[in-house]
Image (cartoon, rainbow, N blue to C red; front, top):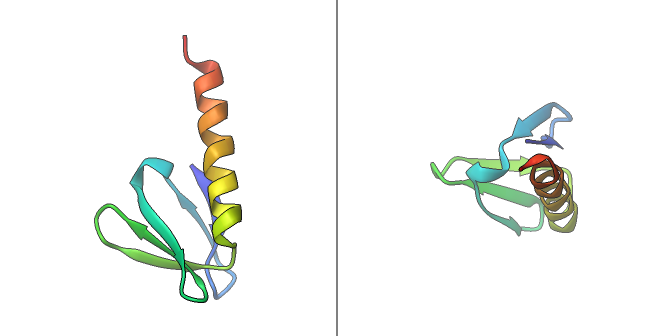
Length: 63
């Protein structure tokens, strides 16, 4: 899971597996697999960086 910030400065935690895609519209829009959409303050690059970091951490604990 990754921590992001909504445009109203409220934090949100998103499960990486639920992210369908991320785009700049110009705000960063995260679309989930259930088609919910979340506008966040982080850039697309930052969302990707956090997702990759999370996945690396999870895989490092896998047998």
